[in-house]
Length: 252
Image 1 (cartoon, helix red, strand yellow):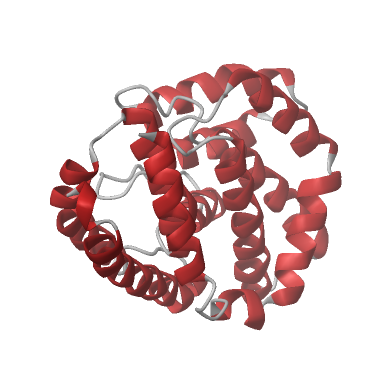
Image 2: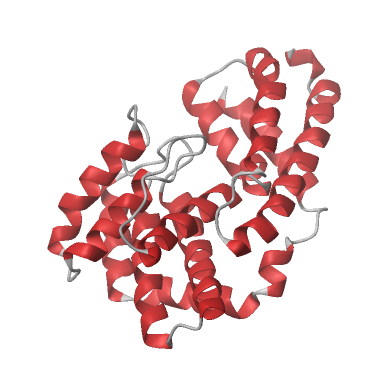
């Protein structure tokens, strides 16, 4: 089964390679660069990544690779949103660290039911070992609690706390774009060993769910750029659906 999905994934990546890079990464290249630098060098994130690497395997396509992408996009969103609000560089630096910590841990309980709630509680225990104050830990845990789509949102006590949740959510849902068809869905399908026939029966339903994400972005920046990422993902998905029905028809 893994070999079959590896072949389909290869075709998906070939299709995706023909599509342009989303505008978010072009229009905000500096914020994305700064976020990558934070993620790669900050002692908090380096230590936390090492912890997650030890604790989590593939995690249904939501392992460390996924968490790292979310962390870098969430950091960029935090930079952009706080620049719009006129906050100081020192303030922004700290908030980037918080949202990246939240991103690294957000799927730590991905294989469990109610993984966001369980992950938030687990993160709260882990982060007590880090040089964070109680309000910062609360903001991180609440962001993890709030990162699932189509679920109720628990508000933070401050606008700054809400922004951690919003940036994490939007960065995580950016992954429902091209990443979904180049990486995530194949890891999930291979892990669950779902037959290709059943996978294709569920495909239209999955596409409808992805399309609904376009209306759920929470930050100003996410609302501007998120729908394009979803549209690119949907275009890749539609083309791939036709490709599977033709090139892999013998499996259906």
